[in-house]
Image 1 (spheres, rainbow, N blue to C red):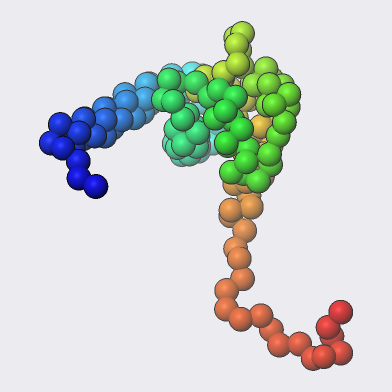
Image 2: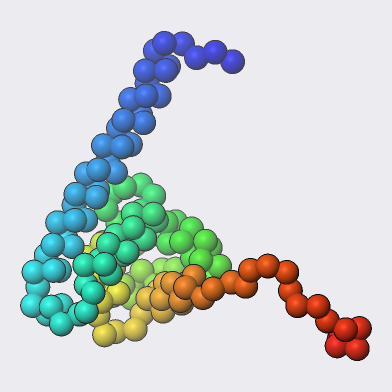
Length: 152
């Protein structure tokens, strides 16, 4: 199937537009990160710059529509990818727990306040659990040989 020159240009523009949206989103998130770095409330948090960078990557991965907020479908995808699928009602509850405003989304600022705050939201625990699971080393190589008597 061939694409016309016009179709190719539109596809290229969509790719450029997507790249532009991602760049703008990253710029907005970097501004919010800077606000948190400048905030004396978080100055005692050790290794804050690297935490903020990790949170930025995680947030950008799941902000599917690049509008700056995680909506219920983005959260559903996040939880499924983390291996912890949730019902629609559970997702709404998670969003209400994290969000500082009305509606069915939460912003990057809300996300950071949850992750850096003392309050232990369910979403925070799930994300931290995922990070810890990733840190554990998986054994490499062949498993040790067992005698027939050791088998269950």
